[in-house]
Amino acid sequence: MEKKSAVPAQRVLILKADRLYAEILRQYAERVLPQARVVITSSAAAASRELAKHPVDLFVTGLGEALEGDTLDLIFRCTKPPSCARRVLVVTSRREYRTIAALRSLPVQGVFDSAEETPDAFMHAVQTVSAGARYWSASIVRYLKHLTAAPTALFRMLTDFEQVVLSVIGDGCDDTAAADRLGLRKTTVATVRRELHRKLHVQHRGDLVRVAAQQGFVRFTPDGVERPGFALLTAAYHPRKHRDPSWERIQLNVA
Image (cartoon, rainbow, N blue to C red; front, side):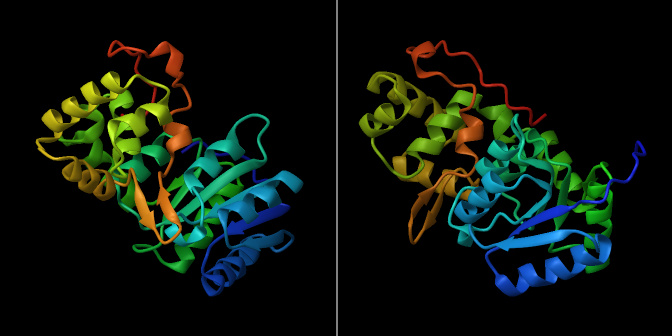
């Protein structure tokens, strides 16, 4: 790993729905960065407002449903120029395809597996990322390698545009509603849906909903349906350029 000169983080933002968990993360972060100003938020919306007010040197975030917002898309927005987060450390134990694929494609310096690693390892992760290097938990790296090597991995089976459509119809909506959401003809969506049935070896619309939920394309919450990383997945997608099945592929780097 390339060595870089350490630059202590002056402002740290922690996004975690569980306040007690967030306080624990704060304590560990302050051990590594005793001079830093650490701010805690409990929702994606609150974190977005905080980032808009004050760019941060280190953004430590979870990915749970209780954050009341799409954290993957928040990371995507805050790392695009002009960036409001210099470095990002994700704390998660999630293993859905969509989550891991999105993290692989984002400019994230660190991913910490909270289910597998110790608090001391978290402090090491904070120290490494704050110094400008990368820290990905070995368990996450192993899963990513398994994911990309599997012949049945979704990124091998489905085009990126098919994944966009799966994200939309994954809540059970009909072809008309999906077409309206994507700015496409209903016949185009129907063609893609039939191809999804064929590739995923399912027969009914409900089966697509099940696959979409299992693979992390949709999450059903008390506040409605979430589509993790949907803005990221569709960032290069322009509906007017894709009025027929000969669409260009979205460049999502998960290989």
